[in-house]
Length: 214
Image 1 (cartoon, rainbow, N blue to C red):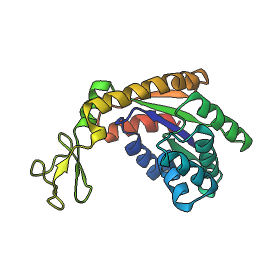
Image 2 (cartoon, rainbow, N blue to C red):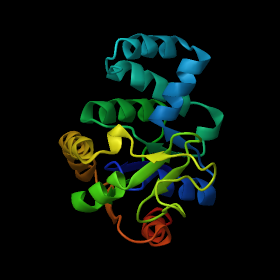
Image 3 (cartoon, rainbow, N blue to C red):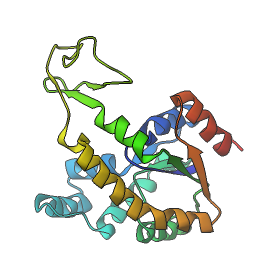
Image 4 (cartoon, one colour):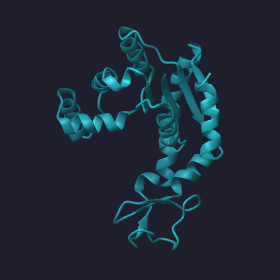
């Protein structure tokens, strides 16, 4: 089973990916995770990526795609995988298609977890993080026992800069601008399924599982 998870920041891709990993024992391939691993291991592509990141520049597609290719040929991906955070553009989607064709593989399902922008803003702006131990909370869904104080270490909770409303709105616009052509791309190939991303984690997973278990 080879899956792609699409969804705006805060849509719950990471949570649902973990549930899929648990049920189907296939690896979650997160762009962020494998990029960090390539940097840590100082692979040739990791060194290239670091050169761009050190200058505050975006890592170009050819480097990201190269790192993804290296990951997909590893042993644990032979039985399937869940791509989270890749592809982000039609160019990356085409490159992924070429790579999988050479491996005699194909994507089975592209799942787009849909949540309205107002709900996403509420989810993301409500996040709080402990300055001391890094524990995460949410003012509505997972509040601390005492407002502003970490349950674990009694450290002070704060809102990260990238969780401010202005930043969230900007991130959602970037996602929308980048992803609309990508959803059209996969829709034209008959692989895209829209998933209602509002409800409990279990309800959302049951909608996803109904699609992938067919």
